[in-house]
Amino acid sequence: MYQVLYRKYRPQVFSDVVGQEHITATLSREVETGKLSHAYLFTGSRGTGKTTCAKILAKAVNCPHTKNGNPCNECEICRGIDAGAILDVVEIDAASNNGVDNIRDIREESSYAPTNCSYRVYIIDEVHMLSIGAFNALLKTLEEPPAHVKFILATTEVHKLPVTILSRCQRFDFKRVSPEAMKQRMDQIAAMEGFTLDDEAATLIARLADGGMRDALSTLDQCIGQDRHVTAALVSKVAGITGKDHLFALAAAVAGQDAPAALEALNDLYAASCDMERLCADLTLHFRNLMIAKTVRNAAGVLICTKQELEQYLAQSKTFTLASILFTIDLLQETAATMKKGGNRRIEMEMALLRLATPTLDTDNKALLVRIAALERAVRAGVAPAAEPGTPVVPQSEAPQPAAEPEPPADVPQTPPADVPAPPAASAAQPEPAAQQAADTGEDALLTAWPQVMEELAQLNKPLWGILLNSSAYVRGDFVLIKSENPTFSSFIKTGTNARDVKEAIYRATGRKSRLGIYSRPAPQKPPKEEPAADPLDRLLQKAQSLGVAVTE
Image (tube, rainbow, N blue to C red):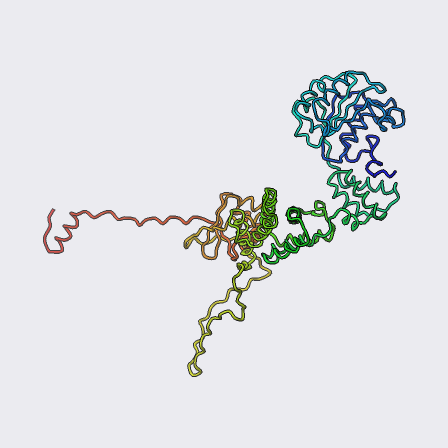
């Protein structure tokens, strides 16, 4: 009778457990020294080795011939435990035995001494499924069990366990198995089974398993059931990760704001009996992959896809802003929640695609922020924003042209234009000075786009961005005057390429080329000095003298 790979190659000693060295080393050391706890709690995601370690520990505490804390797997006790013939080791599924009566039976049986072994071991799998009454019935026995009883609890949802249970157990957290460890284990199994496993195929299986060794071996078992040569294409076919062209097509319609194309593609999928709720979930995952491709430097290590699909994700992610991707994911998740409430799934999906492909239909704050981000991106790139749907586009040849100026008659002498001095050509050998102290003339206007300039500067020159924190800028003619309270700014801006980076940041944010200056507030003009008021008596004397009147003292 054929035995599946994950059962056939289940570890029999602690050293065979993949990816849990931090746990197996502790357990084997406790067995070797005899310092055993009365209750253990194994928690972690599925397929990481919780039940396997529980069975190995149950054999190790009862094996009379342990080797470095591992069971020998050759004595009568080890073979009896593996075969299920020894009743001193009891494995209970709490999902189907979760009542108070089941726990009372365990409490009564634990009072009897073991028949064949040194310890009576109870392995309770999925312990979080026990009822509240069952937990309360287990508390006293778990806290003070007989000396010959060991409890091993295993669960995938440790947060559902009462604190009173957690405090009475020695807890071990099983982490997800790394793809490298899975790949190494699968290569070993392939060598022992005699089939060929390509390196790319093993890597893809390890990523699909999501940290579960059992899932990886199950997928591998399906692959060798079809072909003894396991390739990446075969893994993709077995795992069902092929056929994502419709998702890329829908995302392309959203990126191009082509609502008719999006609805036509959705109609074709509906005619092919595609479930709308499943489509919504797949499209949400698709945009999640676009988010990863746009933000993570090594997207290949995170995304579960083939190399060809990775190139498609990287290319399509460039057609979206990060804000639009996040908004799309939020909207699709809201749509999925509405579908579960009983709404018409097809209509809900059509409405979601219309809102995504026609941003003007959505007027909530998130949608407005996405539209503003798109406008800012277009302005910084110097590209005119896309026209609204339904706006007629006038070809350049048909656009109204400015009227040409009439040429002067031939007999009228033409007056040459006034000579305009041409700007001096910049010399390539002589660099432009880093910063200039602008003249304190004219009116200063606050540069409102300075926060956007600082965002661009943070990408170009991080040290200078740090110096210019809490700064502001003013416009005076063709100068941009920077006002900063940092005393090192005036010397730092004149060093190296700092001024060039500031100019580049200003150009990206505002689209204008400017000269730099250091802001200094114009000195206030002093009021004209007032002359002392003349004495009225002196004015009277002067007037009398002008009339010829003799004045005597």
